[in-house]
Amino acid sequence: MNEHVHAATDLTKNQTLVMGALTNSDGPLSAYTILDQLRDHGFRAPLQVYRALDKLVEFGLVHRLESLNAFVACRHPGCDGHQTIAFMICESCGQVNEISDGILTKRLKALADEASFALKKTTIELRGLCRSCQAA
Amino acid sequence: MNEHVHAATDLTKNQTLVMGALTNSDGPLSAYTILDQLRDHGFRAPLQVYRALDKLVEFGLVHRLESLNAFVACRHPGCDGHQTIAFMICESCGQVNEISDGILTKRLKALADEASFALKKTTIELRGLCRSCQAA
DNA sequence: CGCAATCTTGTAATAAGATAACGTCACATC
DNA sequence: GATGTGACGTTATCTTATTACAAGATTGCG
Image (cartoon, rainbow over all chains, first blue to last red; front, top):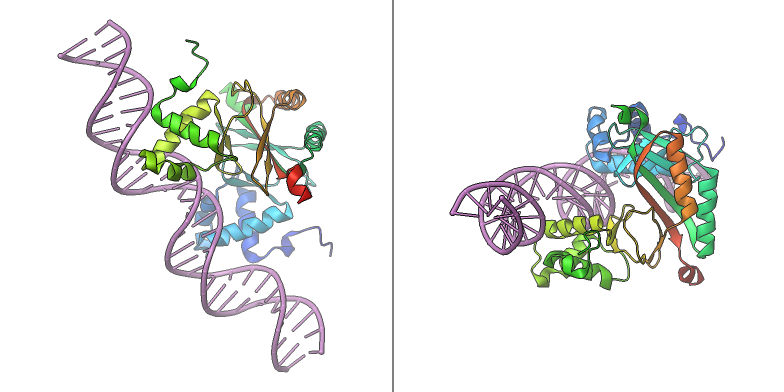
């Protein structure tokens, strides 16, 4: 099996449960919200969630939103988890949109190069109001 | 006096102390680190720090680094606190560099417009190794 | 098989980050 | 002097994240 792909069957029981919670959710979830949702499935301690999340993030199936201390399932089709991804986060409804943009990525790389900075990871989070929430 | 400028004399005692701690520091400081540093000056509770930080961030004198849960004094000369600023954070030495880049800002605006997203605030944090730390 | 190495899990305890709720004080304005 | 506002202090509490330790499960190999 392809070692770079992590299908559902590759996930452990806890990872599957956490992934399920995130996939079923409309928006981002905090680790403790996930914990509460999974108590019926035997979850009792934060670490069970954090450990699963660590792996899911590593696999690129889940993204961490730094400005929210929360996590979202990757909605980016074909996302390999290593691209530069920007998130648009609606402060009203909580919806999150993933954007992967070449120009943005290129510019960030150029800026890093200019400063001789060895770029490892990029966090881009845009806060504001989504289309629907502006109308309301 | 210009209401948009906040010189040292505009700051309250606590704000001045917190600002001083951040200015004297090489890198970003967490709220609790600041608290510890200011115990000798009478600080006893986190809220004293957080309240000062809130104001300083509002004034544009301090930036919050979401991916570190920490704060840095603005080193960006003439920074009005409302520009789009990117941070390059060295994971080895902890040094933080501020970048304000027109191309980046323009692209982010364009992406937001495209999605009819009303952009309020942007977080851009680049993690990696600075020039000196790569050499070592 | 038997055993070691590694990975996953469970649990308790605690650290680190942030806010809520309350009351008080200083100061400006009318 | 009454009133409003903003900063301050204190306690308690809440949320987020990690450390430390032990027990199972799984894989690989002699």
